[in-house]
Length: 227
Image 1 (cartoon, helix red, strand yellow):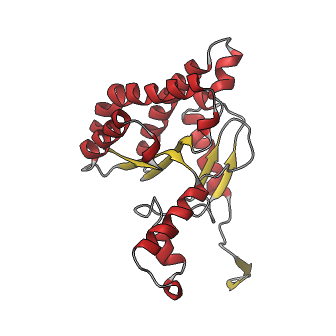
Image 2 (spheres, rainbow, N blue to C red; image 1 turned 135 degrees about the vertical axis):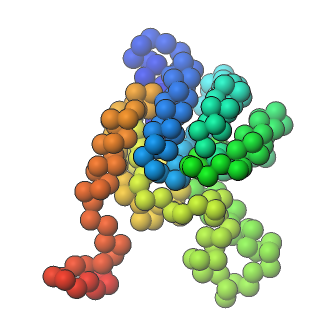
């Protein structure tokens, strides 16, 4: 969800105001995805590299999470949204962890759409922590394969993503879901995240629908062989 700061700068406003508008865009997008029958949505809210941002901005983001939970949790819960938090929770405050636990427990029964919020998350961190979990569980090296390691990933409860959308004009995945996105279709848009809405979502879905997802298969007439 990229472009909050630039959206605010264009309007001569503090970056924090852009992040606030970004939360509104997130809620709007979650509900739009649910209306379109999408069962899983994962958003990159705060990367493990974002701690390098100015202290004031980081502090404001932490406070914004608490405000967002208070403001939107009931609305999302009533619309059938299940909330999951993925990432390293050890570096955040007890107050923030408590808010996350409340969001997860109060929506655990919902099945319409699962919203996974990646916070203090990194794709490399995810792979490392999965390896550590497997080692701690006593898994023998010869037993380790892709299927086993997938079971230790932070999002082992969800299917791998089919569509990866990045806003804000950046054309890279920036350490997000490295393992899970191996076969995801990538869509990049110049739209800044606070402006992302139904039209942009539908355009990304339409682009996805146009893609020929061969998964390494080479088509020759009516037959298909492994490429």
